[in-house]
Length: 293
Image (cartoon, rainbow, N blue to C red; front, side, top):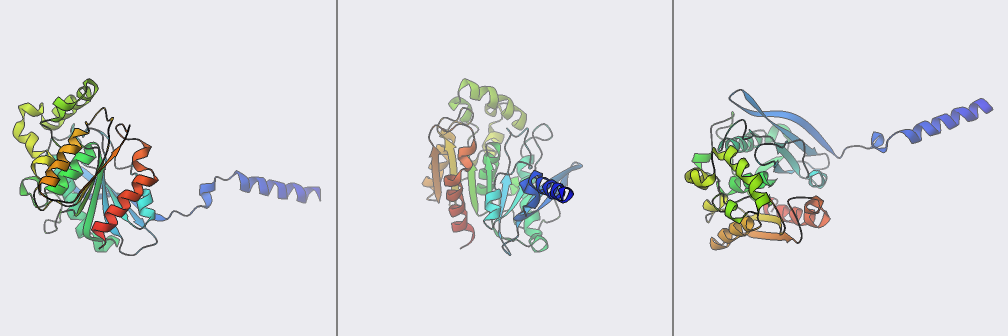
C-alpha cells in the first residue's frame, strides 16, 4: 500500500511539474527561414505564420524596425492577428551596414512578389495584402504603399517578376516619413540616433543627398492612388518626432485618400501600449475593412 501511494504521489507531482505549454496546442503553423530571393550572395528570408482555423486567410506582412541597421524578423508582434485568422509573413531585408538604400525597398518588394507567387503553395489569399511595420519598418511600409508601381524602386530580385508588389493597406507605427525635415524636428537625443542611422542608410546626411532623401521619403510619393493608411504614434516620441506622421497625414488629406491617425498620449518610441487590446482591435478592424471586403 505504501508503495502504491508513493507511486501515485510521484506521478501526480510529475504531472504538476510539467510546464503548461507542454500540453498547449499552437493555434497556428510557423514556417521559418523561407528564402524569397538572393542579393549579392545574401540569402533573403522570411517566416510565415498560418492560422489553423481558417482556409485562404488574408495575408499581412510585418517589417521590423532597428534604425535600418539592426533588428530581425524573429520579433513578430502580430501573433494575436494570426490567432484571429490572418496569415503573417515576417520579412528580413538587407540592413544598412550590408547595403544602402534603396536595397531595403527592393528586398521588400521582392518579398511581396514572392508571397503573391507562392499563395497557392502555402494556402493564403494574396489578392489583397496589408503591410505593417514599426520605426524604420514603419518608414519602409509607408514607402512600400505609396510607391505601388514605381519602377525606380521595384528592383529585379527573385523569380516572380510577373507578380505585383503592390499592397492594399498600410499600418505605420511611428515611422519617419520625410528625411528632409526629420533632423530639424528632432531633439538632441533624436539627432544622436538619427544622424548616424541616416548617414549609414543614405551614404551621408540627407541634406547632402537630397535626391536620394526625397526618393526615400514617403511624403513625396503620395498621390490619388495611395492605399488606405493607419498611423499610430506617441506624442512624446524622443526618436521619431510625431510631426513626421502629421506630415504624411497632411499629404493624404491633400490627395483625399483614406487615412487614420491615432496618437498615444505620453507614448514614447514603442512599448506594449502600441500592441495592447485597444490598439490591436483598431488595427484588426482597419485591416478587415480594407482586405476582406
